[in-house]
Amino acid sequence: DAKTTQPNSMESNEEEPVHLPCNHSTISGTDYIHWYRQLPSQGPEYVIHGLTSNVNNRMASLAIAEDRKSSTLILHRATLRDAAVYYCILRLMNYGGSQGNLIFGKGTKLSVKP
Amino acid sequence: DGGITQSPKYLFRKEGQNVTLSCEQNLNHDAMYWYRQDPGQGLRLIYYSQIVNDFQKGDIAEGYSVSREKKESFPLTVTSAQKNPTAFYLCASSVGIADITDTQYFGPGTRLTVL
Image (cartoon, rainbow over all chains, first blue to last red; front, side, top):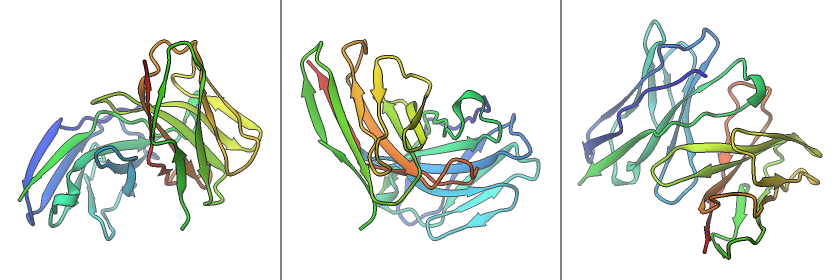
């Protein structure tokens, strides 16, 4: 299985940008990079996804390295409501016996200080 | 509002009893999923269904069963064969898993405690 590596935790100050890194050195050419986040005691929610180019949406930006072996989720101005666990996930092209799965690791727990 | 509902939010059962967790979606999605989450861990896939009357085992299906008789409903039964059933259970749905970019939408979860 293609794996991702993320720091266990990060801290940020409110209203400052946050850069959440993810390493995925075994990524295949057609694997998409997805980010989800999970607020305390809630289900995960989709944040953003990309393949090769950098992506922006209303929640965040995704910067993908040229060799695609790493990516960074960027929250432009962190708020207290952004405190959550952020998961970086590879959406596999060849799912094998578990077609369509999102494989969640432990993610990065982001704390935001006022 | 469209979305996924799971009930109840908290559930307590005695050891040895089967228990069924409800999951309903009104998003008209074909695919539905059940995940389990233990404290401090990521999500692990239990079962998924791509279409009505069809479902597949995920990574940790032992001790669980599902049915998919209606498009909008995907109930999960935690049987007495599940050795450690206390966990946070999450249901999700997506338009269809054939699209690699497909987004999964999650319900609020059911926290099951077996006493």
